[in-house]
Amino acid sequence: MEHASTFRGFSSEEIKKELEGDYQPKKLLIVTVEGSEFPRDVEKVNSESGVWARGDSKVLYNVLVIRDPFNLEASRIKGGSEPFPIEQHIAHLKEYLRLTGNLQVNAVSISFNAWVLSEEYRRKLGQALSLEGEYWHPYQRIPAEGSGSSFSGFIYQGRASDMSVLDRWQNYKNHPRLKALAANEELMDLVKQVFGYQQAMEVITKE
Image (cartoon, rainbow, N blue to C red):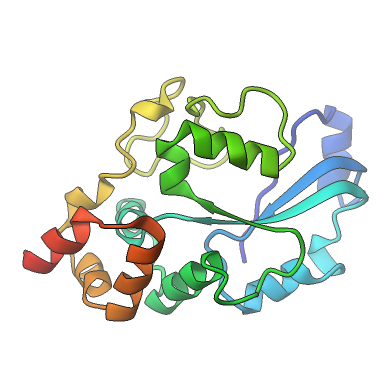
């Protein structure tokens, strides 16, 4: 599983030590499992050894972020990534619904769609993750880590909430990868439970 680190409140010397394996004490550590393979990769997260032993953390959360499969797959197509396997879409949605229990330690599940749309959701989520500051406002900064949005890079830096992140699927509504998602009945049932009605489900099926 690929992973990257983002540091807040660390000095350059502390970050250097951290990257060299001299792990520093932390007030809060959040480990995300977005894009992970269940259950294989999550076993590493649940373990207290290996690369996940990241030093003494006062608070630790293991976070699962899910995005509706249509927009997620559209972004992966645009970015040139391989398909996220349908069975993994299913596994992640089941974990979100707590039908499985892969994440065993301080698990927090997040709906990306709800995070984008709802200030109240962001408030509750920030409280659940022990965050400080005005975390409930629309998130305007595009993280410097990585290459930005697969559709627009860093063009929307400072106004990220203007991006149509929930309409990416419309760019690929005739793509075989999205049609394969819409054709999977088990996946579509889970999508309805988590995200509610999705216009993409109807449009892609009819196209």
